Length: 130
Image 1 (spheres, helix red, strand yellow):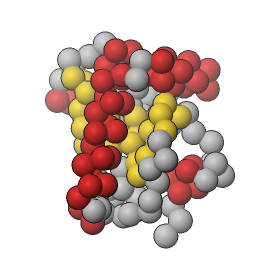
Image 2 (cartoon, one colour):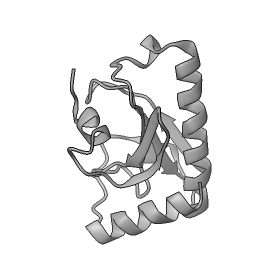
Image 3 (cartoon, one colour):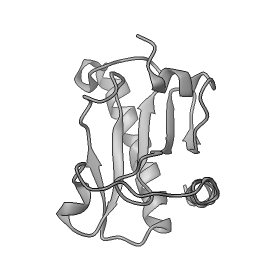
Image 4 (spheres, one colour):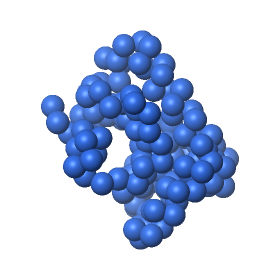
């Protein structure tokens, strides 16, 4: 199935990594809905989140929770929104998006533009707070 996420996991495509375990990876979305938008993925190629084994699904959500708690320390917001859409890349992923209002989770909104330096700095700050 080799997706763009599989290539990121293998290091074939660079990413702005915020956390990694043997089973999961979290990195900044390069086309973020909001500043701080993070993608959390399993390293195992699984298209549909509900095809995951129960223990793996639970572990993915616990990993996402750690990332969300660290993200909230870095990006001032009311909450970290969680979305699982799964249509754009056929590899399970969770979107963590800082939000102050429901409209902040709208994927049709114009995307935030950040420089490479801003991405690097943001990823480093989130890492430090996880």
